[in-house]
Image (cartoon, rainbow, N blue to C red; front, side, top):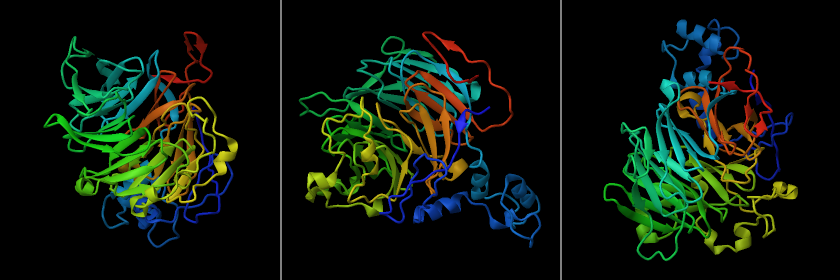
Length: 482
């Protein structure tokens, strides 16, 4: 039986008509997002209206998978096959909520978990200096067991090259290391069984050491972009083997960074200064300023995920919200405003998300200059830099947003309505990262309890195996073993 909890919920603060909210309280109404991205999402995940009819000309019925198959065989749409939107409509109904099955169990905290772009490989990074690469198509066999070099504190992030040949990993050091994933060596011990080549992200005039919180390959695999603890973002040219751009981007730690689209011209960054910024490399050299600033979070930004179109993005924040943004609504004059207007915050200078709960009264606060399109609430962003993502384009049309949570769960929200459509419960510690397979209805979650867990669409109703006892503690929830 599935260990997921389902329910729809919403919240409304009455201040922005097109803002959608998810509060995690079942039974409330929903505020539907009325914006271009909502229409794009519906176009990409809604079926041909003729496929909702059992017989052409009769009353329109809901487009279930069976009804759509009948319509396809009868060629009701006139195409003789499903369109990509038809396929997304069917696949997006099959949420990966059944489980959990244990993929792996380590004795240290899991910080990173991501599928490769084609879904054939899965990467998991742990605080105990380990990164594991799993072959998804071969029963989750470990094809690479990497022991990191010069690790400081933890593996903060890792990224797999688009050709799946190389992996980079970062920690609280200006040196990022690159590993040959495609080599025949399974046990990759730094500079013992394999060379972990170091890429120096510090410049000649850097006096202080810094750490790297986020690292990403460009779509063509020729560059890396990194977010640092010294308020900067960096771009590294792999072909030239040197740092090509360093931007003093924010007023505090930069926790997250990513390329906006395949062109690599636009970069998104998010920081503890509560701002998301958009950088256009084509004009940065002459202007020296961001292309725009996105204001709305009351506390620091922990993660950013791009929609992939160079226009939309989502961000997770320490104000316990996910926000959806359109960069066409970004501001260019935020630096002219007072610090209090930039980030009102919760008014408590000693509040620290790493060991304190978020004040209840602060959950109702709103940024006076919020330019986000929608806000999603219900999950918890405490203890660590919790990550959030758009659901896959191929199988869902990106109609969902999903996120880890410090309350040990994973939340899935409907992008348009803001409703919480599923909640996955198994872990006993914060879920920092999670990854939805790019093709199949399958999700992997990783948490500070050391578990790497697989969830799938509920197929057969096979009973769960009895709970397993782990050294020092007992599982309170049932799970499946692989």
